[in-house]
Length: 125
Image 1 (cartoon, helix red, strand yellow):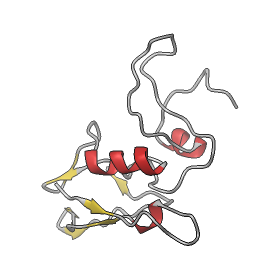
Image 2 (spheres, helix red, strand yellow):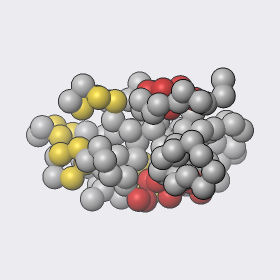
Image 3 (cartoon, helix red, strand yellow):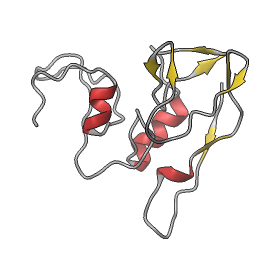
Image 4 (tube, one colour):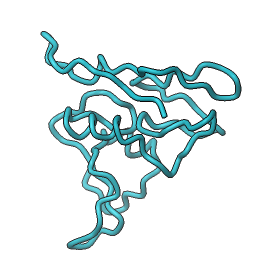
């Protein structure tokens, strides 16, 4: 499983831009760098989120790379694109009701929420 390294302090106040993979990842026999930012790379026609692991060349869309997810939580970065978040961000929950389980405590930009295909019929605009 690839791990990531990061530098927390930057003069410009940005945090997530210096996150780089410590080990190269391959997919279909080619390098797959999965850098932060938009547009997201596509695998099987789907946008590949920044926190999605690639295991032995196979994307694991239903899993989350714990190291990157923790960096998103602690450094206020988007789990979909890997960039710094603004003051307002969105978190996915399993159901829109009191006490509902949070799918991931790492937040997302509004546009990345749409890109991830999260149903947001009740999300504020």
